[in-house]
Image (cartoon, rainbow, N blue to C red; front, side, top):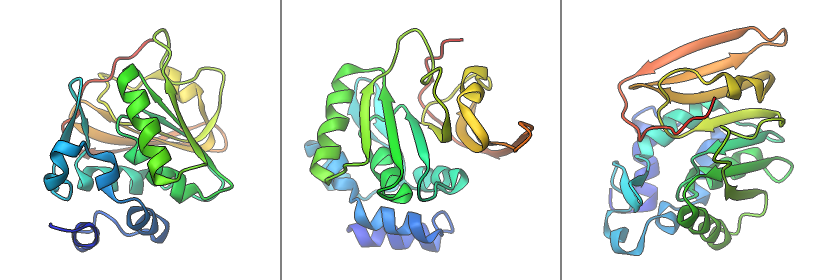
Length: 206
């Protein structure tokens, strides 16, 4: 793919991207804002790109699949763990519309600043990125409608389930699969596995 629109057309044609609010989000937030200057010629390739410190901006197909599994909607409060370049944070901010809000957290200080700068360039006002606590996973004591994790855990982190509202959805990689965990009104969990992926490891605190 050589252009922004060609990448989106590819994601739609492949079946990875289909929800109207997410298509709108991908169209609104060009990946080139979030890709390092030296890699601009590779912006629209369907593969991950390095953003330094051993971290990547994820493959567009993977991002689309994860956001479709998450199904963010207008008004949602979303936690984006491992916000990295800020691209997923921006896409989520568009999907939840101005009456929703996205809280991105990142453990690497230089990437916190990178992500903040990217959100500013993209004109995002309903999202933030801050330094993640080194002693806890997520934001204990807070509750979210949606939680997205962009690094692979060894097991399902119980701390994140405590931060998920009833009728909420958590999407995260565990091993080489993406898992969608939905919490019912009664608190009962429903799990769905989507195998065949690779991610950087999640640094988790339990």
